[in-house]
Image (cartoon, rainbow, N blue to C red; front, top):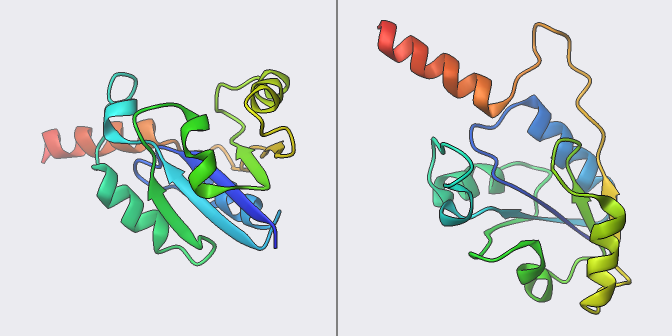
Length: 144
């Protein structure tokens, strides 16, 4: 059985997230999604939903076998818990794949395959990001 680990914040789910998770799931038999904890991403992102809500929504998706909230550390801190064969990285996540592979090998995880998932093929009309969605939501709330 091949276990795939995908990770991210997943704050306000959109088609790009679904693409990332569907493509990740296709690489194995089981998909475990690690959601960034509130504390880990709060300094970089203005979160709309708390970590438990984000976990519950992602975990309800048919392509996801398990969704967990990561800890305060980095991507490496959950590897023992998840024990993935494959780690997927989103096209817009700021990781150098060769550096990540080297870091994994140094930490004793050299047998984990690392795959970058390509971007969602969106038209200009439906190209969305969590930031754009939240900006539009807040704009609408202020207008209404």
